[in-house]
Image (spheres, rainbow, N blue to C red):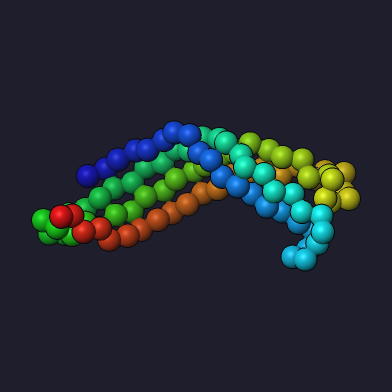
Length: 88
């Protein structure tokens, strides 16, 4: 059974110059997400699932952490998920 999904996305990004850098920027972003996938019934109770989802939080300027002039970062993710579900 194919499906599509979409809606509001909320995510938190934390970025620093080095893992132990005192200059760290952490912020919660809102954006949008859109995806598609399919479920396949192996039995009456076991489903196989595969899905793809793209999430976009926009762009952020990190020049206060990184010294180079073009420190704009695209905050987006692409996820591929596979799984097994049990239906009661």
